[in-house]
Image (cartoon, rainbow, N blue to C red; front, side):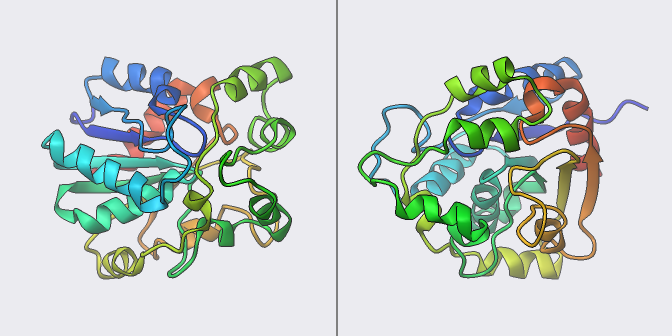
Length: 247
């Protein structure tokens, strides 16, 4: 049976723009779904490094409002999980389901930096806020592009640009989000690419840590691939996002 048409808003993660979804969005549109791929404030090269984390969230809620979107499957990749959680808490009636793809689900009162292993969190203290923050290539290549060759990782890294440091260090207002998840006011899925090592194995691994914060009724799906699965497995990812977002 062909799934009913869904409306997706695909939200990129750190250092990226909406262009990262190009291949996956094409597959979804070819299957009859409506797909939006906004670029949030602070993520376009040349955006000011003085922005706060809330500015990215405001640009997402503004996008949903300005485009009159409702019944949306809101997908967040990586730190995009923090963006979609806060946007959904501010506009829950627009959301059909949240889908966290290799994504952060921060705890109440946490900053994104609090969710990194201590060795990684130290990067933020060494960063000049005026220049913004970008992870070094070896980290991206070895941990986020670990199922690709170096040439593919280099192409992905060339698309990246620094983010305002406050996007990682601001404490986040997530009380309402977690209350809505606990009460069933928001429904969520978690998609875990099984080779994703962007956060290394152990206490600070993404999975199952973040999925567990979505409650016992979170829909959990696993897929082959690593953190940037949309680049080398777009068709597989598109099929999984439909499964994650449908009724």
